[in-house]
Length: 225
Image 1 (tube, rainbow, N blue to C red):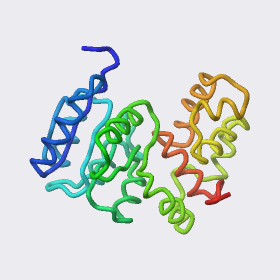
Image 2 (image 1 turned 180 degrees about the horizontal axis):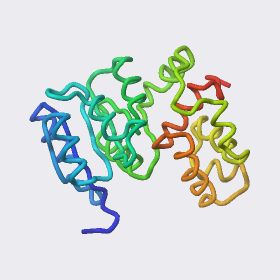
Image 3 (image 1 turned 45 degrees about the horizontal axis):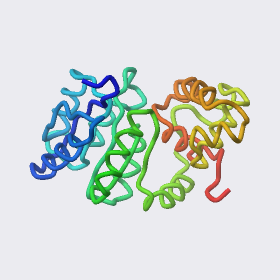
């Protein structure tokens, strides 16, 4: 097996969808589906056993829904987190924000093109966040109106973060890539990655997406600002 192969668990209660996602991801040279399951309870059990790089979860599943499963795999209280990408047919705000608050690293609708889904799996495996472009503006607007804080509040986060780390958080919240952030701060991309590796545990989050969510939820960044 290629050392760079991304190991994935897929969970969906619709057999045709499950088979389709499994086959679609399996066609990618750098992705291997190590398990396909039909509900959230199985997804949690298998993920804890196999320790995949990414778990792809549906929202509505029997026995345990995707948000509950995500909370058990990557929630704020989980020490050894497994990155989660939510794939759902339901464009419903409560599902979206429930998933983000559960700690997921990405959220896509199932009508996304195959290459978009595969790229999202790669992004989540690499520690990056991803969210459907069609949902981004609504997400940011809702985060501002809700103002629900992450486990580490803005004041506490500012105490924990160095000035350079805070600069990176603000740029990341603007949607900048690691390369963009490096150019803006005139540093190496590897330096940005090192800072991010320290920022995540300080804020109690598990991905770049969650860092951006934290910044918006705590008012460090304004939509359109």
